[in-house]
Image (cartoon, rainbow, N blue to C red):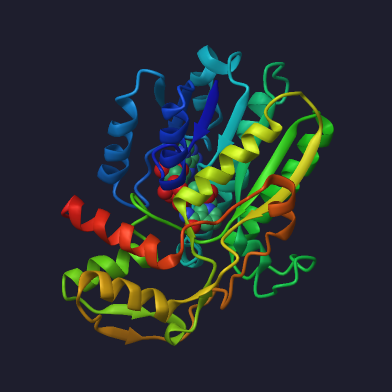
Length: 317
Ligand SMILES: NC(=O)c1ccc[n+]([C@@H]2O[C@H](COP(=O)([O-])OP(=O)(O)OC[C@H]3O[C@@H](n4cnc5c(N)ncnc54)[C@H](O)[C@@H]3O)[C@@H](O)[C@H]2O)c1
């Protein structure tokens, strides 16, 4: 049985959908926090609840006593995909505490709860490309430029301890800007699409010069399934951190052009300087991951944006 945390969130929802389609049993947890629309999260959950192999538990992982609600399932769970957490770099400037509480602290509670499980084979958890800070050199990641990045780096360090101390197999996934249908309303693609459709100005930070490894959710889920299948079986002590991101980078202005083209309307742009905490470039180096796990990144940005805009318009938001 799979445990997916953050199952009402963007990535958790898509992964759960895929696993349920494969007839797997999934127990999903989420605290349904109000970082963005709770209604939107509930809509995702509604779709998941249509499947009889899905169970949902409202649990706040930052509250230790909430984990007791997992008791009924704990001895059945052999794979945990931990995607719950506080996402977003910009929000961490004004709200640093929530990042420490919902990222390393909540994660520690989860590890403590499962550390002696005889059934558990694998934990995958969400880290972030933000751990690279403003450096592209993979070796030089100890220069975070936001509390968000610090919160993810500490999760990576905690994993190292637990994998050694309790012989756990733990793999961190540094996601690079994930986008697609049911995507997060606080992210650029969603915000730009919404504002362009509604004739509102869009804020274009760093004067549109950001470069991002935009990665489509379908590629994320495909590659996650490959990881799970590779590591799901035996129990062992393993700590590894990998990158999951499309190695092709796209300029923010190019993303905007694709959205404009699909909506059929020009954006009113409000050009702004670089925001504190934002990295200028993310570029996924996944050569090792492609070799080790046969990762593939098939969805080109043109196609991905087209699909997203269609989904957004069809949803009639
Ligand atoms: N989407 C991306 O581009 C991206 C990039 C890098 C890293 N990540 C990381 O991947 C993970 C999933 O991202 P997402 O885009 O799906 O975000 P999301 O905000 O859509 O999903 C996270 C979910 O976790 C839940 N949650 C938060 N704190 C919780 C707690 N204490 N207990 C239980 N549930 C809690 C939220 O209610 C939310 O539904 C996050 O950890 C995020 O930081 C995402």
